Length: 398
Image (cartoon, rainbow, N blue to C red; front, side):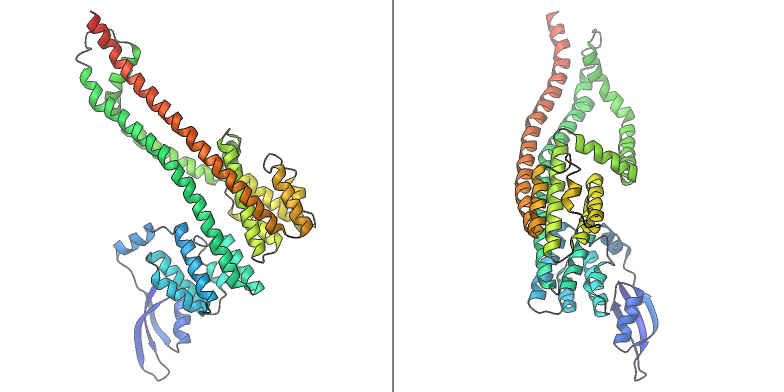
């Protein structure tokens, strides 16, 4: 945020200008630090166009990876944290992220720790990120922790990118299929109505020929219902009951459920190992990991494990009660880590194993989708063709 200010210097001279800060209070603090006594302060409004662009900007995983990597490298090189943040801010193209990084610099310059400054932007920096930085500050190993964090975010970004890229082909096929069907029933097939005017048509042909008129007249119904359904489903999924129900249904699906379980196992193992390696106590590591999981059931199990560890119990004692969520191999590796005191190393081995398993499962799902999509497209096209050719054949036979 930018603020126009007017103020008086110690010499009594008046000064005006623009100051950047994350809030009005921070702006006043910055000016006071520079021995400027504020007489007027007002937020500098951007144009409507600029404001819209800022709102639409999305801070991606790639942006976070780049920010973390740059911060780690500059901090390791001995560059002060405030100077590092300001330097990264100047290199950032997205205005929204640029303002947030500048806000971090202002807060740290004002006396806050980096983790406290990060907490002011919870939508950008999640509990995992803040917890890692806090552990690095407490242990005096912030430089190493930032490197751990950059590596972790890069792996997570690559993993998420692979899942998204694997879904592009099936999604493209579905879009093409729907587009072809709409073109056929709306623009092509209605022209055959006059040819079949006096014939006793089968139900499939009547359905195909009339569907175009139905779509033209009632197109607004699906156009209205689909966004409404999507909005209601999204709202329901954010409620505790909705989140719990959807999680149960997804985990019980034949192929998808097993895939989702493996993804959660990878994230749990990777997050805990990264947090513990970064110096965070196991109780806090479990709590932070629970806070960043998307699955309601796995999140509740992690909170239960956290409470068990607080009572002096082992993590494995909690996980062993949920054989449907945690396979024997995962629990055995936890047990080995607890006995040797190297739970971060044990969980890294789990990550390596399940990461490969997830990759194989993803490849298998994509390979299964391809013939399924081809069969679906072929079946629908065959149905349309047969519905049109059957009366034509009857007409030629007469």
